[in-house]
Image 1 (cartoon, rainbow, N blue to C red):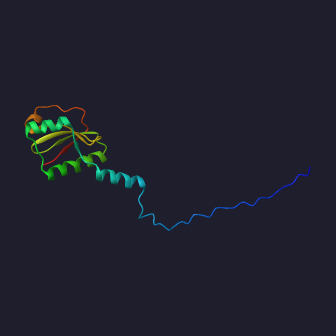
Image 2: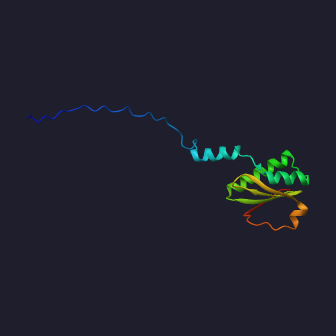
Image 3: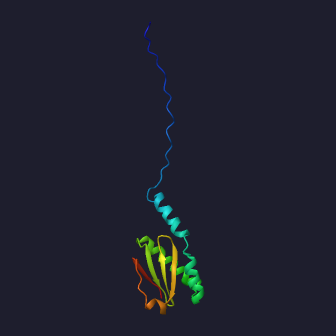
Length: 125
């Protein structure tokens, strides 16, 4: 037997073309994703909280509701998990983690209550 060495030519793949991208103008995907999530998440109202609002006649103007949502988003960015939101006429317990209003009380009821498991408070005039 004859030992033969055979040579095979290896084909190389074409090198990818890199575009010059200015790194200052690009943002990491993580940042873009978080930004998109924060802009699309809306505060939900639990069935219990909705019932309390209806029975107590508590209503929020669209402007006030938008302010509450924005402040809850800010609290979420700061690491708050459960928050007490106090407005002129109501107090809301909000699960910031789940973007959900858990319960609502009018201000008179809220004055005599003790709120537990809250790690942030939002005051809105």
